[in-house]
Length: 82
Image (tube, rainbow, N blue to C red; front, side, top):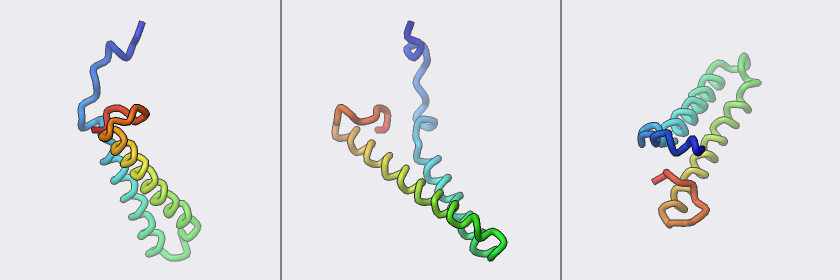
């Protein structure tokens, strides 16, 4: 029995990954500012914060590529991004 056929699809607001990507990246950017302002006390956390921002940008870039492929009609594109 196919369980996914019984579930209703997610609403557009819940299916959109953009708010999570943007808020997560902004949170890491705020963490970078806090680490820089506090000085040497949290200086060991700076590489982690920078990595968080980089991963956020990479995630948004991957999302943008998948959405572009879905708009083009590519067969290998992720579904539901339009």
